[in-house]
Length: 109
Length: 113
Image (cartoon, rainbow over all chains, first blue to last red):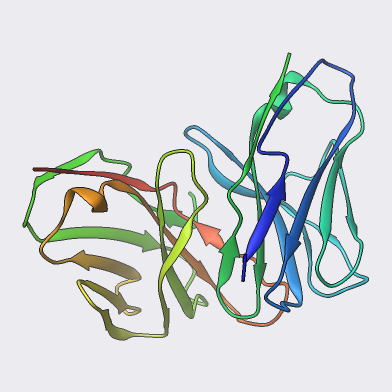
């Protein structure tokens, strides 16, 4: 039982490049979330999916898109990366409390 | 004003001490309260999950909620160097699918041998 897994663990991008962060959970949870964590800012919600087939914006959605591929998988896409998107990205899933993945560290140069 | 306030610390205590970590909040509709532990370069790990007011104990950890004061606490007894981490409080109005969690910014704890 792996819980929430994220790939890649670390990525370096140049400004303007695109990439997709992958997230999968094996806990049969309905809801999934994407957060970013920055020093002094705490955890901020980017997008969430309350159930398969639905997605909604969180606090900081600009510059991101998401896809709930199926009940297990929820991906986050950066279409044109900017240095302001340098951050640590966490995926989470929940029925009651939220359970987090190990994170993806993204550096945009 | 942020909905959830948490002193960032750092808080440094000797091994064996009792640690008290706290959060205050402004939204009286919050009913579900959580504490997460986050080690450096790792994801947040759920420690405690409580509903409404009262205490909940799990081993060396006790979570306390005082809704009348809008104040929650996490107590760690017999603290160990392995407890050194950042502790995040989180709370929400609902437990329904897709609920939004409101996080504190975290308190950094260092337990020295």
